[in-house]
Length: 281
Figure (cartoon, rainbow, N blue to C red):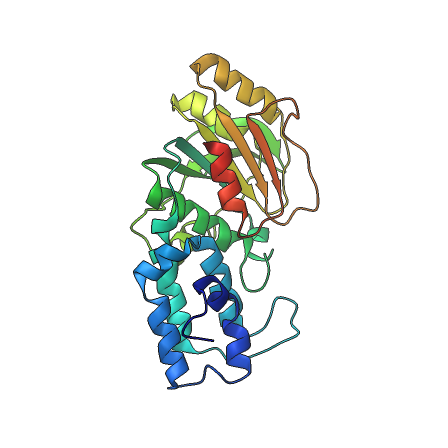
């Protein structure tokens, strides 16, 4: 099956093929898999989203299935080919053409909350930011941080200090590991979903889509996100939208159900980025 198996099915079954010995060190099958995963034209034809490939990479490199029922010894050449395919798949993402402000939760729990096997909420959020910056023309990425870390603070209290937003050192020229480092080891200040709109008003930023990405912390703060979005729309005249993503959340409600410009994403999988992009459009 291997020579003609569709790339999506191939990516999903790498663990099984390695487990049963079809993919083994120095084997023709291993070489063929590496060749196919390195084929830029085939990746483009597959329309695989980079996030789907990243998920497959983390599961394969972990050497066990999501539920832990099956295990294998991963092939390093195959893992490396998956890593390369992640970046090649950026070309599969259709730009929305919108102006984006992305707010990332930088709390410690983002590194311990996992989406499936081997992929933390922190890694996933950094990957989404990196993909957005690579394919969209106008993206600004900020992190929710603690008092004293940013030059400008806002009023919502969290713990012993005020929460704030600060720009994150993420560049479309970076590799994913560098983007992950940029959102790691920062002083966490609470995920106040109203802050992106207040920040944009303060800085005079023109934003079409605000996106907040967190694990399960969706605390609203002193100004409700719905009210903050309405303030932003009224002052700027921009029909801005808000997407709040709780990657590992079991339930929350921030969006006004009567407002077609707000979206709550509860949980996360490889289909979510396309849903978010369609909503932005």
